[in-house]
Length: 306
Image 1 (cartoon, one colour):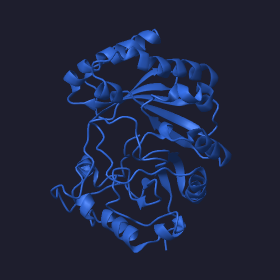
Image 2 (cartoon, rainbow, N blue to C red):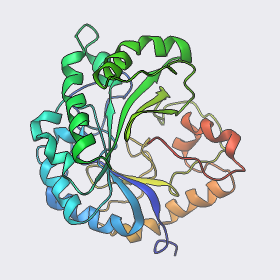
Image 3 (spheres, helix red, strand yellow):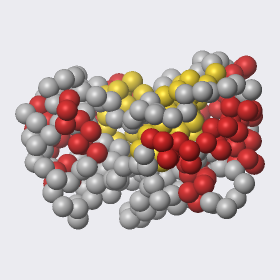
Image 4 (cartoon, rainbow, N blue to C red):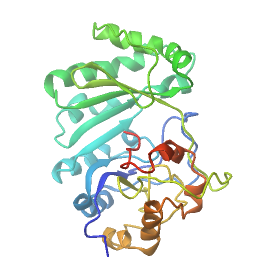
């Protein structure tokens, strides 16, 4: 049994699979709407913490739309978790900035800035950005250790896509009165420091795998189950953040112990397959994101999205 020694860099705990937006970047969730109760979340978190360095409060869904998000974050504070939060930012002011700035558990917050124009292409983005930038400004003073990422994960190609996002970048740099000259030829997964621990983070779009997709390959490597694992809002454990519909159901942490699930034959078969560069699960064979690791099969495991 290897479950006692398994440790992940990041564990995704989906506190809700419901989102107030519907971006073209994210596919619709086909599962029933689910929300973890505060006590269910505490139960899961206590089991996960001995096995993970970081906890992300999403897989699908908008975490700040959870009706008891403040209580969820307080549980993380009490349990001394290290939390990474990804949000579209539309509910940021609902909780008050200090809820996040003074949360000892919150290490990083990612704002998916590509979401606004994707949903509201004709609206002025400045009122949306105002809360995010004011929050960032206060965080720089009150909690300079907090990492903040402004995500633009909608790059179609380097030059054209950067030009499309230029208005957002210009508005942010003008707010902080900083000039950013290197705006084109942004490499894949490249971050650009803005000020303090605030960064722009650029990436291209990618597709979530689906069991109805054609098989891409039965060979490949993936850092799922070594660098990350995911838990859906109904407690279902999945190997990675791309398994949005539980195509690879490894068990349910609300009815089984997390340790038991980590020792399951299905999970271990996946791990052994990855070691041999064999994809044993149908969903993995259909995953196009895994192609990003094709050139690194013989190197150390690369990271999945921040």
